[in-house]
Length: 308
Image (tube, rainbow, N blue to C red; front, side, top):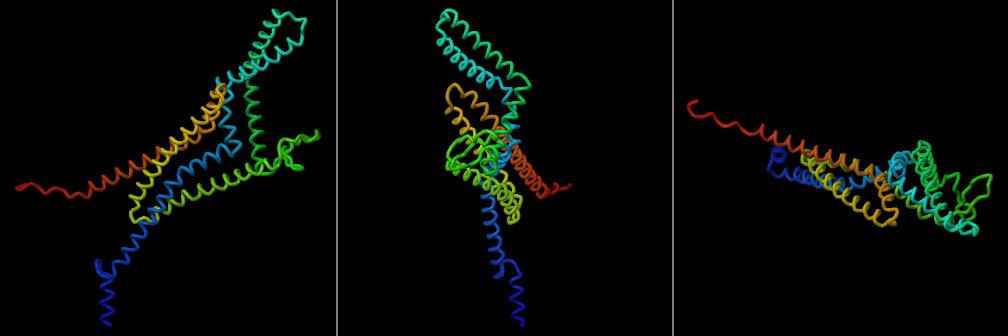
């Protein structure tokens, strides 16, 4: 009886045989917290990308909001005007050649003047509110139908008889492409949709789990903020590099236009990442400052001078 009491008392005392169980538990918590913190740091860029994809690329309202300012961009207007003018000039030259009774000295200036007039008319139309409304409406319809097609519930574009057809009832159906060509894009869309939801759930869970499992939450929170900030900075650099590659690979006449569109679509990603980077740096600064203040308060006061 006394031996059992002594054994229980020995296990309750620190530094005696009962202590290793608590040490192992603390080590397990540290390992678990480190693993969850690492998972959060790795998942954070994917979560930011997923939030941007769901808010801009996969959302019709977000997509339209992103591309609406493009309609007023001077680069876009200049590119469209140049394209329309060149096509009009080519069509007018072909028409002039088909009329042998028109002298070349008259046909040249006439076709050039008509092409310039057409370009000026296009510029005036693109500067009007009607064009901006048309731009919004066209992008809304196009994006919503694309998402509906990938979901398999589009009313305008439907698979029929092994073909994807444009259904403009009561007009005849117009074949667009083989139905098998939709299998790959639809699979990518489903995987992308599921993956974005998954990372948006797992990242906060890893963050909360790391803090809950950690024996030293202040240190773990500092590691989470610094690690997340670092991976986000790397993700921003990688996205900027990828953006530059996409723009430079476009055809030279359309590189400026491609740059405007790409920047408009990715602007939301960079803003979201920038806010999180700023928040992570601010949180890390607060934690470090709080730790310094705590150490200052715990430091013993110097003894009073002799004879005081």
